[in-house]
Amino acid sequence: MKTRKATIYNGRRFNVPQCIQRLDHLSTHGWQLRYGGTKMFSDGQDGAAVSLARATEELLDRIAKLPAPSLLQKQPNRTKTSDLPVGISGPIVRQRRGSTVRECYLGVSLPRFGAKRRHRNIYIGSERTYTTQRFEQALEKAITLRKNAEQVYRRDATMAKREEGKAMRAQQALRTPRLAREAGAKAPVRQSSAKSVAPQVRAKAVAREAGARAAAPKTGAKGVARKAGAKAVAPKAGAKKSAARNVKPATRAVRSARA
Image 1 (tube, rainbow, N blue to C red):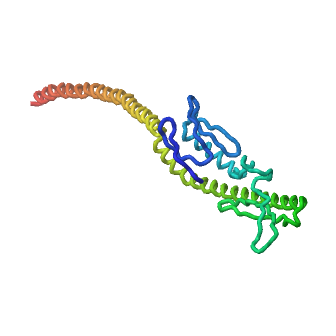
Image 2: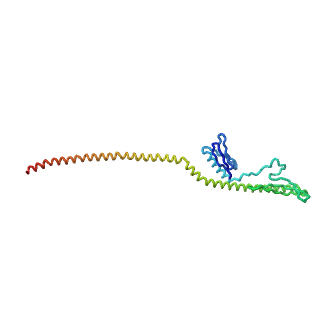
Image 3: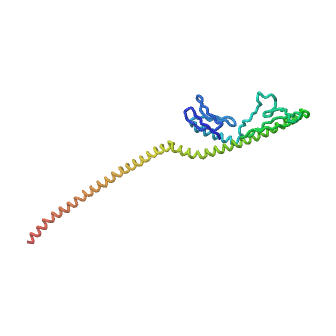
């Protein structure tokens, strides 16, 4: 499918497929789809890229369901001098070489999608055999040929358009993961998650510090208890020493009595 570069009001450029037009007028900003009818996709709060993606998706859906728009002429030109339908002209009078009788034909233009149109001549009769009835029969045949050619043209145009739509959808499917990765790399979600993780880490550190502080008085109490126990034990050792001191005079008295 053919695409073109489009620059919007804020200077951004987009690769826009056929059948989608940009509208930037006063407070109107968006993309208008023109395929099987019109539909507006406003930028809104999502932005031009998102609205273009929505318009493209709707375009591909319509291409897959609806017939391709026909570019065939529907009304005769104003300069046409006869009242014959579109694509049919005549009667055309010719005279072959070596013949003394002129012949009448109707010219039919047969369109072909992607190729040059063909021209067919429907014989009506000669100057001697020409009648109104034969003219009407030739005109009916010419109209049938034209309608069949138009049906084939529309069928081929629709098939070609749907193939283009499939190719474009495949390109978008290949492009979507890359765009998702880029969007994920640029998204501020990671920053917010990192910011949200930081308080958790800080909370854990504070909890550890609080736990350490809470444990400190216990160790201090144990130290005080140890000191108190040591002091409580100290008098007992002093009592033993005083008892030893009291024993020494008694021992001396015994020794002096023996002597």
